[in-house]
Amino acid sequence: MSSFYDAVGGSDTFRRLVDAFYAGVADDPLLRPLYPEEDLGPAADRFRMFLEQYWGGPKTYSEERGHPRLRMRHVPFRVGPAERDAWLRHMRVALDGLALPKDQETELWDYLEKAAYFMVNTFDEE
Ligand code: HEM
Image (cartoon, rainbow, N blue to C red; front, side):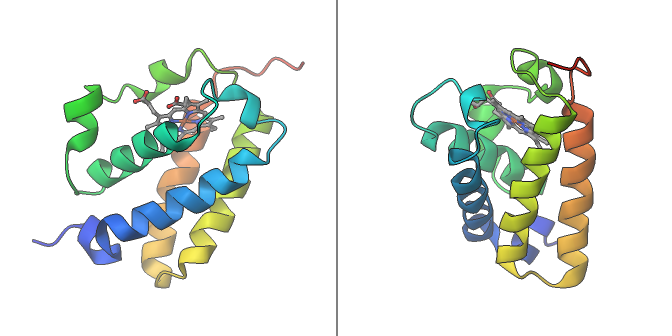
């Protein structure tokens, strides 16, 4: 059975999504300081490998990083509602840029939106 990963266009599609997303993050005054490394490239690779694995593509993410435990991995970073909304705004632009068929786009977006809400780890105002 063909995976969602294959159906949307495989690695090329996930690369385009993640590259466009990180282009937004690179210029974002709220999100950019959260990323510990000066070079966003390695973070983009980790995110892409995770998404590829999640949607039925290669399992490279877990080979290199182990179990995702994404909520735990985000604990060191402040992810409040404002960070979540900024994250989703860049993701929306990146996803629109792919111009996928509507059903595929909706499936991806629903997942990403739920995942972003799940990642919130503080409601403290700063
Ligand atoms: C890593 C921020 C949501 C997947 C990171 C990192 C930051 C971050 C600062 C560390 C960068 C690095 O890898 O060096 C955020 C913020 C979010 C968010 C502000 C707002 C809600 C999400 C969501 C997903 C995700 C929804 C999945 C759908 C990942 C993955 C990594 C990561 C896979 C790398 C984990 C690892 O292997 O170390 N994120 N993230 N993030 N994030 Fe997020």
